[in-house]
Length: 218
Image 1 (cartoon, rainbow, N blue to C red):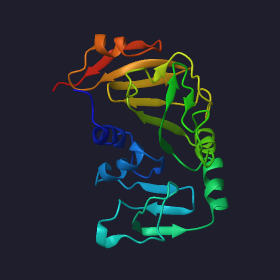
Image 2: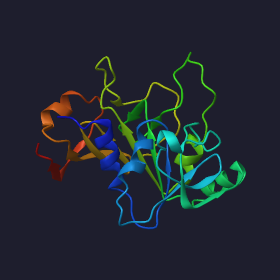
Image 3: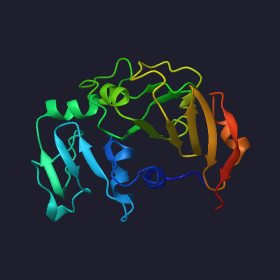
Image 4: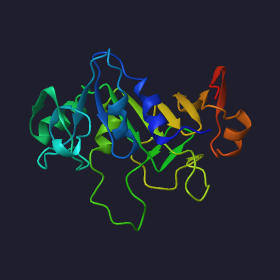
């Protein structure tokens, strides 16, 4: 079975290490906070000016003034601090964030990312995505492998406006995990019960298969 969205978040959390400063994009990435291993110390940063983002609140914990960059209500960790968005983007652009975990509409075989607009759709703006992919040390993308109509989201060339070109380091989809080296995609892991033939059939992008491919059993 393909990974669920919660399982995608759980798999992404395995990429985090003790001492990391991490930014989580809207959508599936926000779930990663629930799966950060207890034995490591990870600090979450939000573009709107918060360091030390905690898990989503229970109903009796909701504070309407405490939100992340996606305008979702959040909690604060014991070491949380607040500052202007100017300082927040200085952290991002200055290379002080170790990992950004983002969602995507499309990803290309060379690691291009399109995740901010569909032409003709009304959006508020790109937000911090362009700064994140340009400034952080590692970009991890989480997404469904295929769109609702079955069309591939991991493609040869993105036909949507790009957030960044050749910026992705790791792509985790509902079917598997791809690592990008020198703008070439390498399949390194299959989701439980997913065959190499299935992921090939459902992928438009060209990719190579790792000689150490991990195939997760049911």
